[in-house]
Image (cartoon, rainbow, N blue to C red; front, side, top):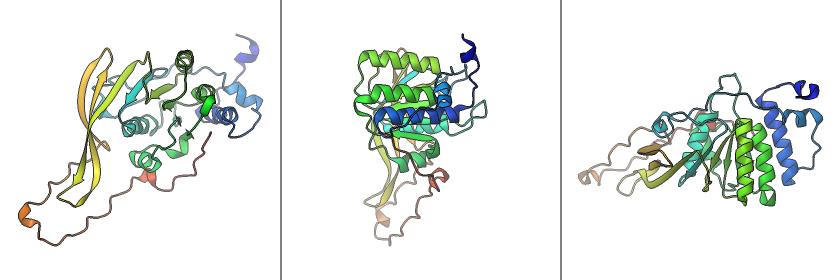
Length: 268
């Protein structure tokens, strides 16, 4: 290792994330910016070996070791499940006292209100809705600075996926792919969506039930309710009470994460 490379300071995940964001903006054409020397140097810093990111305890039977840094996890069938994973992974300060950053690439219709309600920190979330032909380059830039990168159905070649997998492993970044990803370390599939909250023609949707199975070398299946921690819905009134006057239910409580969120930065 050269003396110049050894002199590069480790200035924290936030600065590396912002440096990666500048590079992603440049590569997708969102902004024509010159990479400062310091920011470019930060992207060359190798991530130290660090513990896995946490997952909701409801999914601990499927992912007993959490989200291993440098790994690829394929999650299909429910974007809400992906956002719940993202919220747990990035919703708390990590073991080094840093706040994890995340990016979502290739999901132009991701529900940000739902993400905030599930606990995703929007002030540390980068969105690249439509990276276009520059998808591979944009993802590579984000892998350098983010803790978690969520990938949609992107125009990636098999060679691109191999390079991104290797880059994520080197940088210690978790990739969550909502499209099939050959060689993923873990594969989760959500099926059998069932909604809670509707009575006999009244009520509101408050939660959804999913069957989630792990479909790689590990075989397991569980039923979960989103949002995690949601209390069971009270059974609807009996038919004999159907003539009673309807009292509107109280408005649902909004998660604190959805209040006073800062402006988002869209890339691409």
